[in-house]
Length: 141
Image 1 (cartoon, rainbow, N blue to C red):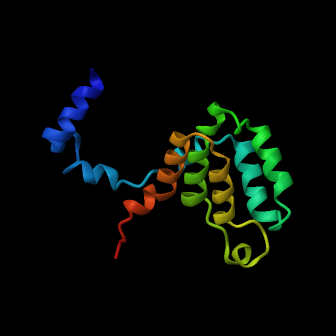
Image 2 (tube, rainbow, N blue to C red; image 1 turned 30 degrees about the vertical axis):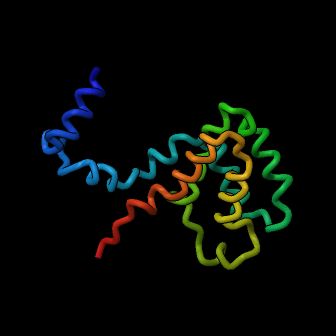
């Protein structure tokens, strides 16, 4: 009931909830702490290790370990993959030194995570996670 009332207010009188329209709400950047909150500190540390220390071509062992360690191959664990993708896209910004190196790059990690998703819903959610911030990106000049 509370959500229905909020939804009605947002559609009929958005000024009452502090926005001009729903587009304003969609354009609000998700705070980094919110994106980070879905990962445990240990999970974040291990994911960053893969993307900053493991060389391309040698990552399969680490990827398998990461998947099994966090149960990402289960349907429950699969629901975490879109959050991992948003974390990689919006929180982790490697230095130029890391980008020039031979370590596993962000695009490769996102691609690997996407290929592990089995359900169609999970794939759709992962794609949305990948493009969500890009769709509502507004360049500040």
